[in-house]
Image (cartoon, rainbow, N blue to C red; front, top):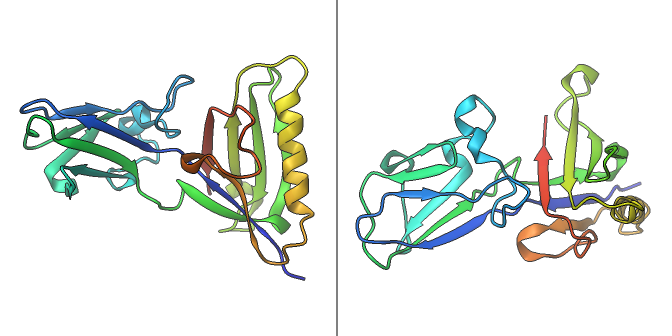
Length: 196
């Protein structure tokens, strides 16, 4: 029997029009009102898993090497200032932890918090069988609700994916940058991937 893979991808792209000599660019990240990034880069300098290679920075179409920029908190600082009118982009690097395909046969459960603002989808870790290592998780955040409509819709979508007849296919659960997948349209404001 073949198993399906459930695909998730975090939101992560922001562009700026630089002023003359501008070196610092603040990422709109991780908060409830963040419109550009699901990752919370403001925790970057406190020892969390975010690193310099988690992002790709371009200025006027040229990629800026990690040695030519620094990254502290949620601010990217260029060693050399941009020119007026340059388009500066900061994007998530498509690496482990910013997108994931999780095996349906390792699904453990769906749990919503008490205030009905967050649902965690758990899978047995793909890299280890040791229970002490923890689980792979997808955490979805959305506005508070009284009748748990969103959390029920999330559980229903997961159930549909787990019972799909794709036989070894990839099921798009939520591709945030493209606004597609079974979970799109549910008012989800943040998707965080946690892989062991």
